[in-house]
Length: 325
Ligand code: GFB
Image (cartoon, rainbow, N blue to C red; front, side):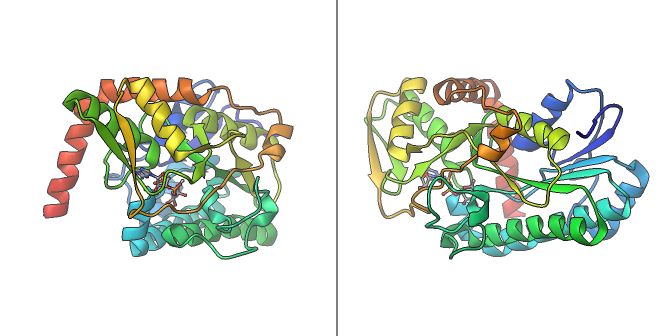
């Protein structure tokens, strides 16, 4: 058992969907949360990261900072997904070692597993076959992160661990259609189709791939469970336990949003991996279980989208002007 009592916990990536859920969850513990915005600290800069660790002296680090995106963003920006993520995780893990951090949790993704891994996917499936081509760049960076944490444990006796969450969704997600994951994309598409009175809504791919969706608050809770109760070299799957075909997800989202037109598939867009249901038996044996069902989670995320729609619009406008500059 590890104790968080009175610890300084650095949440890297606290403005992202996962990081902000971690900050919400950690508010229930007696900890001092340490954060830095992107403007204050460029995690790709090794000297800055080292200086930040020397100043802030965190006891615990949760590495939830990453360049992330959906299938199209991953496929379109392979260099950014590989380079930025390698730098971020290398800098933080090395600085945590230098700074004598008592515990570090590295967050990866279920895309680390082979494209055609037997289902449900056990942790031991890592590096047993070829990756899904649309996101192999991100996957390679995440595999490097797992191995780096493991290497510091092996060579220096560090208590560094890794969690591999399935597809996450929830408040704070990115709803930009060009870079988002499927859940926020479908929420936005259904909402706008409803407002316009469209007769149909188009989803990418065949609609046949299956995905497992976990609410980000359940993921944050799993991270705390792992910090407190897990201290082994092997990474740990964090999944909901069930998956749905994308077409079925689209129907659920349409129902929650109140769009009653038809759903059309666009097979010219990539499907990605056919299925990636995680076996989360190890995590469950530590006493964790998801609390938020899929329909309930979609409804909560849609409410968040409605409340934050203006912010989302502003964020997209900023992104466009940054891209033009
Ligand atoms: O969530 P998503 O972008 O990523 O797509 P992955 C999941 C599935 O939904 C794919 C389909 O089969 C997409 O073709 N889909 C249907 C859509 N309509 C849409 C849409 O409007 N937008 C999007 N984005 N998808 C990502 C990886 O894979 O998952 C990352 O690229 C990471 O590396 C992340 O691992 C968790 O599940 O395919």
